[in-house]
Length: 325
Image 1 (tube, helix red, strand yellow):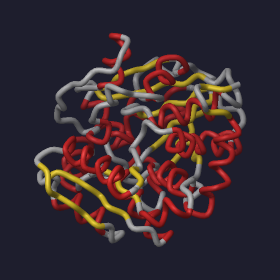
Image 2 (tube, helix red, strand yellow):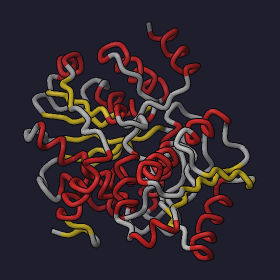
Image 3 (cartoon, one colour):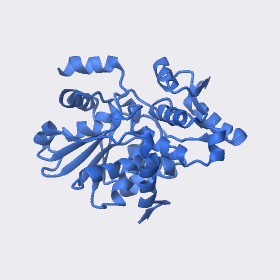
């Protein structure tokens, strides 16, 4: 079976390629959530990656797929969050020049986090879109390869490797709940499962505020939307009007999409802290938030929920702790 130009062989190849550069994260049984739902619930803790997020998988696969000549010219990206850190981290480990472009409005804490891996950081623009345009101009002029955040074959295959790990750890999995934003993670995990065990049910979950992929699916084509404040800030952003992969894969192969409220997201963060003693950002907790909804999970099912990252400000952690404990 092949989806666009992606086969199961591509995802297995990615798994082997990135193995020395990522953490094989644990799939942990969640007793409290399993008892509440009557199902067997497992959490895939991608927040335990070196950069604290799953994005390192896709970035590693993309950069490692480059030729020697391409690596010598360096890489660039225009992400201000986990993807920017992932690109900088992998480039640093490989001794490759990395440029991260961002707007002047990016908070200093994010700039500092990305700077930990010593990329060249450029902040010459008033918008992130303008920073992205510069990356592609740089690629045309100097050959510096753009590492896109989600809509790319190698990025998708890298993210899909976690599906293979989940199946290795628990072949009985019949349902996977995945945070849904631009769709790189959703597409990779979906194909990782569907190209291996087609009967696994894939559920994409987003916040309620400006969920661009879900709204695009409703109208049948990619759209743009203004961003709104949300605890799941890592899920914000567009999917690209010229989307090549993730819109079609999400539309054609994801079985269900759902949205959770801000209060549900906060309760999901609190649940992970209380019961698994780990910090997860709002976007990471959307899957747990959905599973906690009364009557949603089918009793007796075997469910994997992906916890994507831990990039949450301590101010938000304090607010959630004060409100829920």
